[in-house]
Image 1 (cartoon, rainbow, N blue to C red):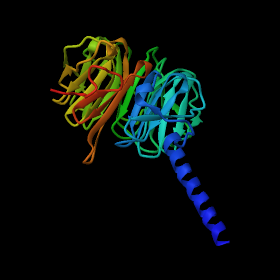
Image 2 (image 1 turned 90 degrees about the horizontal axis):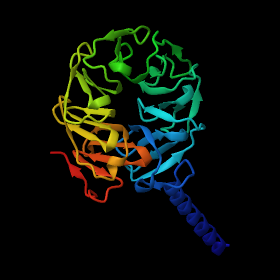
Image 3 (image 1 turned 90 degrees about the vertical axis):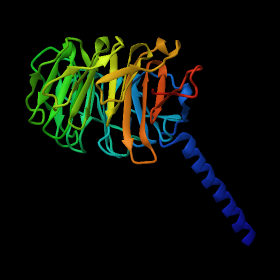
Image 4 (image 1 turned 135 degrees about the horizontal axis):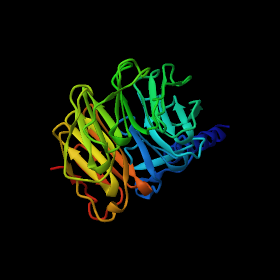
Length: 338
């Protein structure tokens, strides 16, 4: 009997180790982890949930999540084949995704399972933001603006009465927010999104992305345009940028910023977004666009952490001021900003 018990304990121990190893390899999704160099999906949206917990969304309803700072990615079931464009996490557990055909998805387990919410529209939704677990906004095609005050259980349609595409939305709190879109349009709300007023824009180039840092706002778009406002979006100026490539993503933390766009363009700013310098890009990476960048400051020892991605799974990671590509024979060691 004692010998049998020893065998039982041994078998149970082997099973537990096997289960732990399987969980590490396959994750909660049950799908094998993909090394960053082998990812080949088009990436439209990204978010740093934590220093090592990252999420990306893209073509054909694809969601990938990493638990090791982007070294490996596990595919998560989205329940849709519609393209997904934007993702927002106001805390570690709850997140939302917006996409094609009015798709809105919600998670309450840090992005491992997702359920759909009824947006009430069928238009593409290009940008979503939540400031906490209750208040959120999403914008998209045909002047679409939706808002929720109950975590997405219900979405109120407060769309703009104009045929315009809105690409980016940002909110400082549950009252003050900004939208950017086609033809350089910038809108502002002071009542939580119930009503919107236009703000004078210094450009007519479409703006695809907006970022908020403290009382400062930044927008990026066609022709390499980058705008900044240091008075909560009341007035806007054009930043100095030597690139004319369209920019699809922008992120600012403290005085450091990154912007990404066509032809593998990556721009860096270390003066609070007033001037931007291009990072070196290999000829291979110039073949692809970059659609998103996420960048956050975490408590030491992590500090500044971020990543970006785009066409055909092209990705890069940011550690401090050092940028490293996932597929780049010329710059495997990473490039440090000047």
